[in-house]
Length: 146
Image 1: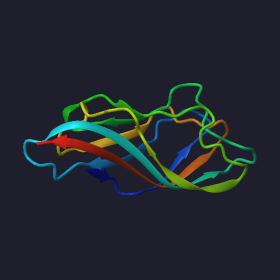
Image 2: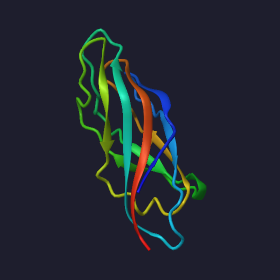
Image 3: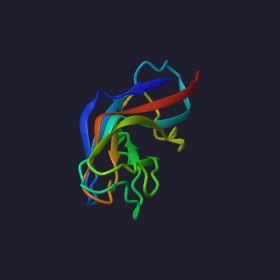
Image 4: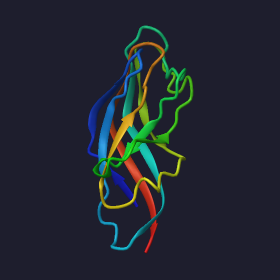
């Protein structure tokens, strides 16, 4: 079962490490007594734009995962989607169509019920400023048993 956030107009990844907030996801409609078997995070964007006059990409000198948190219980953020160096390589001052990134990390122990879940992109950094991700959504895909 998939759950998606409302869209966020833009997420800007600059040439310096920042931790931008991403839209939150509310999980609802899981049946009473449901046990989460597996959960993964998803990151969707309609367009990515390089505003720099040179080729640009993700600078993975430090880990910069997309993370998920269940804030209602004061949980810490947990890694959900990893990136590699040079990911999203894009020519100078251009835009390209977006994609959906589907995480491979099982976060089922952190996604435990019908709750709201916060997302962030820890230490997001481009080789050069800026990469702009447009019309961003985050999602959770949940497998459960009753």
